[in-house]
Amino acid sequence: MSTPDEGPEKGSTVRVMFALLLPLFAALMSVSSIMVALPAIEDGLGAGSSDLQWVLTGYTLAFGVGMVPAGRAGDLWGRRRIFLAGVIVFGLSSLAAALSPTPLMLNILRVVMGLGASMLVPQIIGMIQRLFTGSARGRAYGLMSTAIGLAVAVGPLVGGGLIDLAGGEHAWRMVFLVNIPVVAAGLVFAMLWLPTPHDTDAEKSPGVGGLARLDPIGALLLTVAIVLMMLPFIQFPSLFGAGLAAVGLGLMVLWVHWEKRLGDRDPQAPMVNLKLFALPSYTWNTAVLVLYFTGMPGIWAVVSIYIQQGLGHGALLAGVVTLPSAAMVVLLAAQVGQRVERYGPRLLMLGSISAAASMLMLAAAGWLMDTSYGSLWWVALALGVNGFSQALIIPSAQTMSMQDVPEQMAGAAGGVAQSAQRLFTSMGLAVVTATYFLFQAQEDHQAGVLASSLTIFAMMLLSVIAAIGAARRARRA
Image (cartoon, helix red, strand yellow):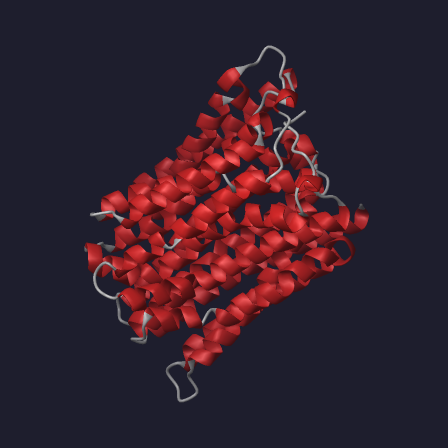
């Protein structure tokens, strides 16, 4: 079995969750706060559009690539120690990124930041699976969803406020420096409050030791496959990129065969036990999360650029517009988590429909900007509905996806789900921002908002279909 962590009796539930979620908050705020900093990075470092896309997607790509092996490592060698290592890597790379002299150096360090962040999330999911059961687990995932939603929603506000306050060509550096005190506090609290593992109970696989237990061949195949599948969306939108994606897809198929072969010989040997995907609750609810995160993160980048460059407002106002979304997440996510056990499928359906509706509202808000009825209040309202959908979807789908997963597979299961989310987030960011930039080049920002919103609306319709599938499977269970 996996390295067990002692239960919450060693520290209060609130303290344990706070220690887990503070670094997570910083890691996810780095996804959204950077979006309001893009114009400042462009001016301060002379970054081009390709550099800016790498600033966005390089972090997310590394975040996704690292989570499956990190989740497996936590299951094998102790989630607490992998979590602490991730906090340190993320904090140090944030400091280095703030000091970057060139766009290339910034993008390299953003990748390192993403790898540090990838070490955190699977351990949080694994520890929640071990330390909590029943409605308490739902509450824990609700708190996790609150941290995720709050980080995504207030990131633009925090980043915009710091940039406007600092001013000048180096103002964007504050977006990275703000991580340092948050991460430092998180590291201290994690060392004090996280339950310590019984290291003597570490998982043993017969005849397999050291790094071989991490399934290095499987880790390499999966990493290269994800990178090759991502590159066309970031750097090579051409026939060459399509070829890279095809090779990546082939390597993904090879990875599946490798993991199956390893699992047939020894169920403990593969990095990911493919029996996970035989669990309908895991597969359907993970699909909802993946589809949701394919579209939604891109809208924060579009709204931020539109308000600053399309309407000529400051970074702070671009952040203020996101407050209704943050408020909905803070008010609802934890409450939703407590009710997942009873109403989960209904909450998931309502959230998915609301997500699609919010994009239609945003498209309408963009269209109205050319009329006398145009106002940023309409944008804020649409984002508020988006926050409502997020508060319903994330805790519901996260809790239901893990309800049938064995504890010893929890880290790897969380890593797979989160990796898929980050992979599709990167793809979605690339597609949505490219759509907006296409119209921005023609100086038609309103059309860019309209087209981007409708693109995400189409993605959310797929999320609704997946939510229907998850609800039907839940009724049969």
